[in-house]
Image 1 (cartoon, rainbow, N blue to C red):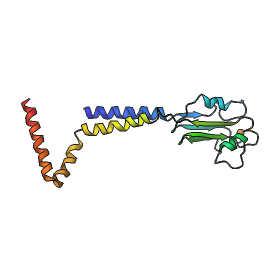
Image 2: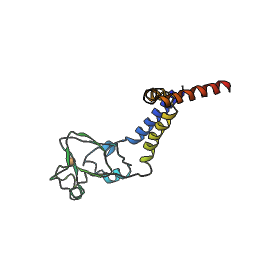
Image 3: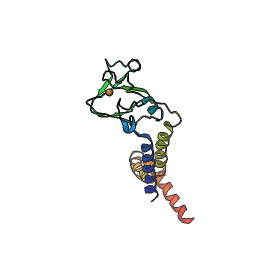
Length: 183
Ligand SMILES: [Cu+2]
């Protein structure tokens, strides 16, 4: 029963960690990726707390727009001559896999200049990021020593490889059983 409970708790913890980590952001929210509503994408990005594992979605009419991932220099000057990557589906999902700035703009002439550009900055949150993964890793190792199931499987090769140690363990087990039955 306790083993089942521990496993359930572990799964709940893992689910919470996953949920809090993978957020999905639609650029421009309901307006999407456009030049029509003169959206301040800088302001939009400033209110978000982007993290590794998040998904950024660019939604737009593919007839009129696209998405280009560019360098900082290209972003500043709206230079669309050699983008790092170009997306043209009209609903592009980009997974954030590393820290730092991710510069995007629309490569259609004039659109970047009109403000169709966004800087997705993924901050290094030193206090938050390593702690949940650390505790998630720590709990199974603590469990492994307390869970009774793995010990018999470990004991079997011990007996075959090192008979005396196996016998000592067996003797100690019998002794502890004897003591527990007396108490
Ligand atoms: Cu555009």
